[in-house]
Image 1 (cartoon, rainbow, N blue to C red):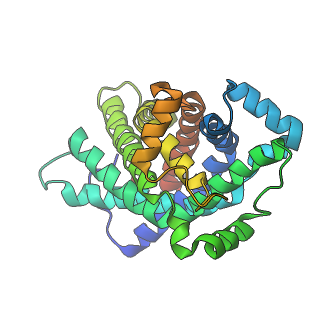
Image 2: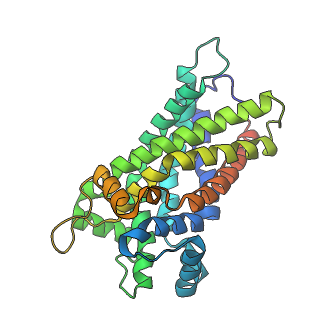
Image 3: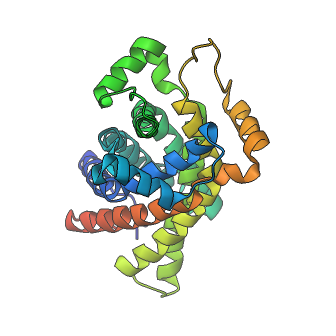
Length: 304
């Protein structure tokens, strides 16, 4: 467990590389659940017929084949090349900065704040890649309706978004995106850090795969509960076009999206995709943290 600073730029570059590598492994492993979650969150916008994760997955495989579950993977991986290194390494640096010299660890509240700040900064940088990912995932729904998809690939999506909506259009939905990132990382990083310390200090498990697994499950549940409403709003804001054919937009702001979603679909709609989100965050964090902690050990770095 990290109790002291690791100095030198070499360690920072090593951590950036290891977080990127671990994130790519985790993202590839759990991406189908993210796709299913996105489809569920967008479902209420176009259909009143109830659905669930199994129906969505079956429909995708039936219409697009097994590889349809990985549509939008490339921008998702690109996003994590920016997002994950910044938030993880940023969290460690901020944690060291806020840590008093004679203190063994930050409080849970302080860790939550540090996690939220580092996640927000990372999400602002990675928001364009996240936008492309959401748009491409939503394209699969157009195919199921017999419509022509908007984009042929991530670069085509990037080009068309800039052409139609301007450079600033790449940051559409950035406010709910950052709100979600703050909540996710507040739950994920702080809870993983705190839970792992608690597990090890109380000898429930050691600083090994068992301790990392327990901590990742706890942090995944906390992150999902806190972030799901913001995630629903973020997904809908990022998916809507800059303007409809009538020259109007469906949501004027993240608050407007929140109000309309609750008014039309009820309060429970804010937790649409909860179980797919948790089912993805749990395995994602397990794969990421176990890989990252192992890579750090191999690289001669102390535990997170």
